[in-house]
Image 1 (cartoon, rainbow, N blue to C red):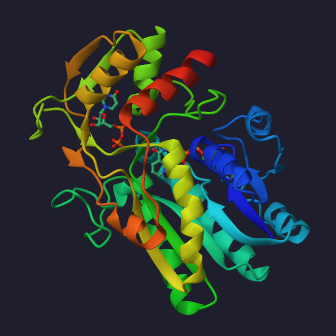
Image 2: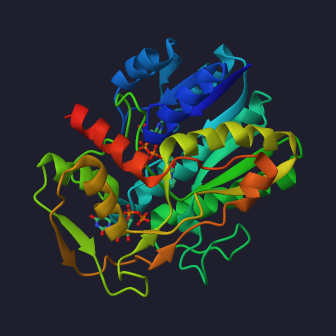
Amino acid sequence: MSVLVTGGTGYIGSHTCVDFIEKGQDIVILDNLCNSKIEVLDYIEQITGIRPKFYQCDLLDKEGMKKIFDENDIDTVIHFAGLKAVGESVAKPIEYYKNNITGTLNLIEEMRDHNCFKLVFSSSATVYGKPKSVPIKEDFPLSTTNPYGTTKLYIEQILKDLCVADDRFSVVLLRYFNPIGAHSSGLIGDNPNGIPNNLMPYVTRVAKGVLPHLNVFGNDYETADGTGVRDFIHVLDLAAGHYAALKALSNPGVSIYNLGTGNGVSVLDIINTFERVTGIKIPYQIAPRRPGDIAECFADASKAEFELGWKATRGLDEMCASAWNFESKHS
Ligand code: NAD
Ligand code: UDP
């Protein structure tokens, strides 16, 4: 039996593929390469010694998807594929809803038609909107402020409805906090096109001298140092959370887990840690708050620990060092 990994050449997907292969799980990757490169397959092979089967296929291509299910014995799907840039989603809502929602509908239809009923979906802490308090628990109210977040919320709802309608399905919704860092080989990592939106890839590009300075979006939040606080988690810990989540696929219906460390870390903490572990100075300027940002967002990750036996183990030093190791080896 194989696990189909949609979006498997992307940032989180590639690390999860490595983790699964190293644990002996046979995988098949589907990706349309709209935000990743084919070379990632070489890197996965260099790290693990195994080259996974790959289909360059779009979730919107029903025929292509059918072929993958026809040709492979897939019993579980890990569904990463999707567009993820918040700002772009505001400018291009049609493309985001079509890609993420129609893409997921196509996927679950093919799954049903091929008697494949186990699905792990990449959701996000963005579905908590502006949380009433921190740490955030899975049963907090849900809301969103941009089309990207709305696609995550709607897909969660679609999958909940699916499980009500068809009790053969078992779905795990994983709500990721802020994945950063990279595999220790420096071969795979976060490599966004153009100017990064997220903090860590921006910091590593400033460190490399590609960008002149970091803009710190606001230092007047109600936090210890005034800058935004997030729950940064090493991407390898996040990857391992997917393997742990397979356990919950023996339960019928929908299970929901936060994947975070449970620690709040500020933007200035990231800059200071990065400078200390790499020895590279990060010039920064205080800029206005970024629209839509919240002061604090970090997880209560105890449910995943209690029910899945999963816990993040890697610290901030390793996250910063590995992110820099990756950036310094890639153009
Ligand atoms: P990524 O862009 O690196 O990976 C996504 C992959 O999906 C890419 O390789 C892309 O080419 C592929 N893809 C997109 N649309 C596709 C389509 N229609 N058909 C086939 N392939 C398609 O992103 P990532 O950071 O690895 O994120 C993976 C998932 O996790 C996404 O669903 C994202 O929304 C979610 N997520 C990411 C973060 C984060 O901070 N990175 C946080 C929360 C949730
Ligand atoms: N941030 C920043 N400068 C940047 C990018 C991000 O100060 O160039 C801050 C942002 O305001 C937030 C934190 O870093 O407080 C994490 O932002 P990111 O976009 O990485 O993740 P998210 O907003 O999804 O939590």
